[in-house]
Length: 230
Image (cartoon, rainbow, N blue to C red; front, side, top):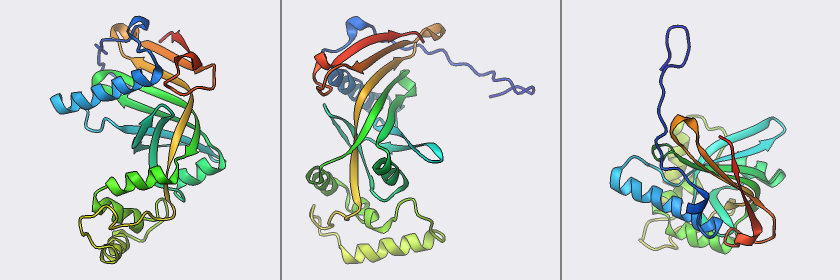
């Protein structure tokens, strides 16, 4: 909230548990997985992390930086990944310039993980495995939506959905709906990862990992850990 003179008056004390070097996991991937798992557990127990896998993804084009929130659908030692129409705005931007930044943020836990690196296409076989796990309706919408393109109201979108629902009826099988040709996924291959943990008096913990070797996030020797001032 703001006062009448426009100054910000609301203040929340970040009473997080923090993150010390002595608490850091053996590998970056283990630490990422730990925090993601704890966010999911918090949602199940307290319900205040409604989308633990919400991933903000920033791209860049001639107009400048562009950011949106997607869902993290892949996470392994190579990095986090998300699905998209490859002809969407972010798909085209990443094809033209693969530099990317992304972040997982859990405000109720006073935690965030930031990634910087390059985006790589996820192998088609991995995409097909994931696509078959989606609910039937979500598979149909992947066909119905020409993501990021203008549409003259909601009616044409609903009509397209009905058209593809009729074309690919739900028989309860994972192969009821094929993967659209222009639908795929990107993985963020990070060169830098930062763990942010909110602390009281704004003396937050910031532990940053910088790539110093060719290994993935499960290779501790490929990363250098540095504490940053808040």
